[in-house]
Image (cartoon, rainbow, N blue to C red):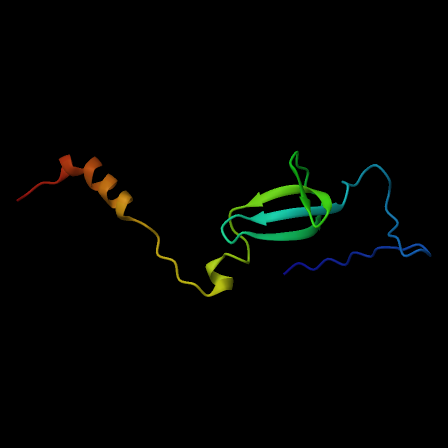
Length: 101
């Protein structure tokens, strides 16, 4: 197990002191879980070209396929993967190898 001790120094205004021009810009970013249709406003350094208005302000916008709002582990839902198409495709592809004794 690795443990990191990162000490951040604050100035008298409560702002973190870091070297300028070497850190990515930390900003509020709007994440959208499209499966659950839930929005998360989180501080991040991610760069995106899309923006979206949320609660009267414009934020950088990132879509997510899955998050804690839609993941079965967190929601307690049981999802059955659809294998019907895969099985049919497999059987069609390997039907010529089916030998009857």
